Length: 329
Image 1 (cartoon, helix red, strand yellow):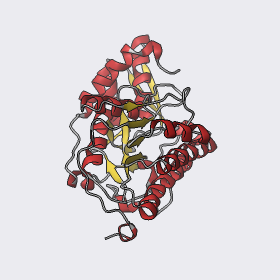
Image 2 (image 1 turned 90 degrees about the vertical axis):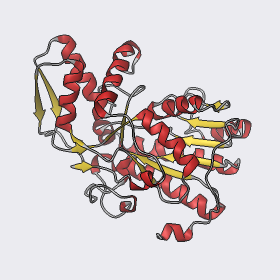
Image 3 (image 1 turned 180 degrees about the vertical axis):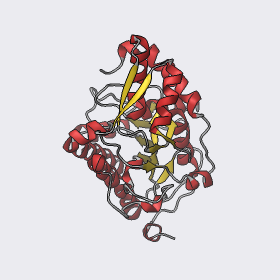
């Protein structure tokens, strides 16, 4: 038993959620939130609530509390966040720290005031130490130094985990946290400056294939290892955890398998039809050497990923090409 288990004051047995209960998906237009929305619809939930950032600024505390007072959701998934890749995180650490802290505190405080029964907070695998033993177990949290290129974002997400644990201890509510690995799929951010590694590579190689370029240059050495999970698998895992898991410790969500950045680049090049060469700009940062999650806790809760990497990449490339004219630039 961990220290957090000993301090946990929740007496709750997970079970099927009421499909007629009001369910708020914060961030329902983002990569994860939109996938969760689709999953909930397919599972028969009839009272889904979502607001775009233009309709509800989650950094505005008064607006968030007013929204909860009117909608009174029974269930909440907090998937809203300011996210980005190495370049964005390294360039705008204040924004990633401040925006995410405000979003989390406002939503979680409002959910507490208005008695949300079941809540899932979504974080990121970057919460773990840069040199954590691989594969990374949940109890590696707060045992070492963070990756400096995204430490501000990681600190915000760690604060969210601790707030969930604090709510469980102080108020006895069965709220939980899930930490996904690198996600990809329909609805991703493919912008050159703000995207994560996989959508950035898809855009880069697809542009090169269309233009007839003979070479593509990527950041770093290509040697870091990364784990990738299709967002539709992530959405399925979220609902599964809400209905089958309860505990104070965050749950890793991933595939349990990783590949090098070089290998993922080669796969994407093949999928998009790029036949040129790949160069590596070794003057640019690699980030964490390896980040593979131990998904034993998730497996013990009865869930494993289903979508293979190449099949998921092909469907993502198809989606990207179908929506290229309307994507964020």
